[in-house]
Length: 154
Image (tube, rainbow, N blue to C red; front, side, top):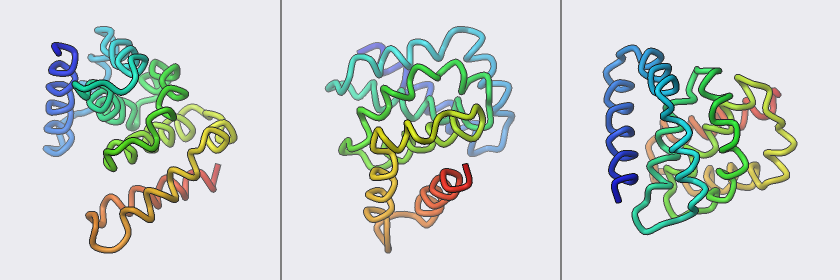
């Protein structure tokens, strides 16, 4: 669908900017100011679809909420929706969900108890087990451990 393609293009752009060390915060702010977060949250409302728009929306939200309090607040309605996808079949999307939740509680005091009650800790442990050993890049494993440490500290 057009929505899935738009989400995919947004993810590619954000990832490219992030990897090149460019000013991600400027792009994050511009996307929020142009109303780009609401359609991503709406894609999550549709649930799992064949076009994977939900997965692209999650990855885009991960980039948009990283180190950006205003975007975390704009995406706040997505937190409970994200937990519906926590056991999906795409491991890197599961890690992105957990990272968005971590962004929410570290940047905007999101309720960690709510995250735990919705199965967030189980999802973290499962992801860590799944990504153990040589099955995943060390960066992914460290990211999961970082999320767990942030949860424990908060």
